[in-house]
Image 1 (tube, rainbow, N blue to C red):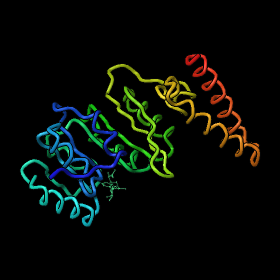
Image 2: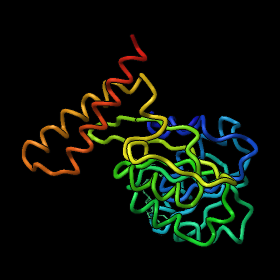
Image 3: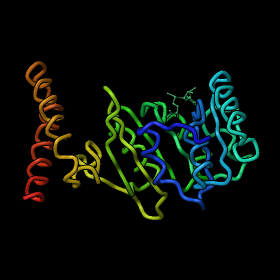
Image 4: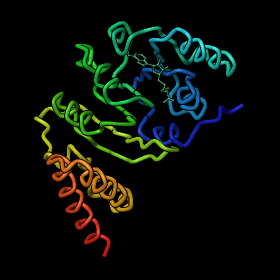
Length: 223
Ligand SMILES: C[S@@+](CC[C@H](N)C(=O)[O-])C[C@H]1O[C@@H](n2cnc3c(N)ncnc32)[C@H](O)[C@@H]1O
């Protein structure tokens, strides 16, 4: 029996390949992980959660789908235990950027070459953090799920310094050049305009200017 997976989680599957040695940090029910094994994307995967109850949900599902020889649960805070296992790729999904940054701010990040991240807020902070650790963004995608907007980020460690402009950090170096995102940016512009109307903040004004430029460029690309 195949496990049911949400569109949000399914959107991450394409970033994970058979050669990756993966740990899914904050796995909770381990749905993504079970799906990755069932579909043959991965033969084995480590899954971790800091909350014993959440990990118990994962273990229950792993047993239910009889994947105990393929999926290995670990009770752990973030990536603190990856020095004990063979892992080069970290998946973190369904969390805010602050938590993701906290998890990745570990000396064990040195062991990681690939990150598959899905954050539901403060995407600019996450991009800044990734650049500061020399992780380059290779793919970026907006996922609307109910009232929440997630950004999927595929990032890889680079040997040369990674730097982005302020506009790219704010709105995503790859998102701002993808015409599929025009409607998203138009919606964002309207919400920043409402904020500016109420606050007259200089920071919001700057974001509005960036968004106007992004929308103009995307429209030029479309025409
Ligand atoms: C909202 S759930 C997301 C579950 C799943 N990744 C998804 O995308 O549906 C967040 C999970 O991350 C776990 N978590 C939060 N902070 C963590 C940390 N520092 N280390 C490990 N797990 C963490 C929580 O216990 C919870 O089970």
